[in-house]
Structure formats: structure tokens, C-alpha cells
Image (tube, rainbow, N blue to C red):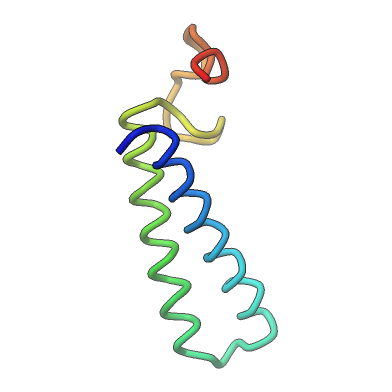
Length: 77
């Protein structure tokens, strides 16, 4: 998958997980929503790992020291 497609999919999955997270704040007993949240979170982690393997760290908190090397991530945009 190319960089733009992967980032778009990653953003969509992250958005869905966040929306479900907020929903669960007010509906903590909704088991279907909880399961959907867990599926989105798992998919987000998978996509994030795929992105970082192909294009480098996505955030400074990523488990990598590549932030110290040139080029910086925004130099490749």
C-alpha cells in the first residue's frame, strides 16, 4: 500500500476508535461497542506497525530512535 493510502486508512481507523472510546465513556455497558472499539484498536496498531516498517516512525513515541537520523520524517513529504 502506498504512503498516502496507508495514512488515510490509519487516520480513519484511529478516528473510529476514538469515537467509540468517547461513546463508551457514556455507555460503558454496551458490549457490542466495546468489541468494535477493540477491533479498531487492534487494526490501528497493525496499520501503524505496517506504516512504521515501510516509512519510519509515525510519532516521537514510536519504539524507534530514527528521529535522531536525517532525513527527518517531514523532509520526505
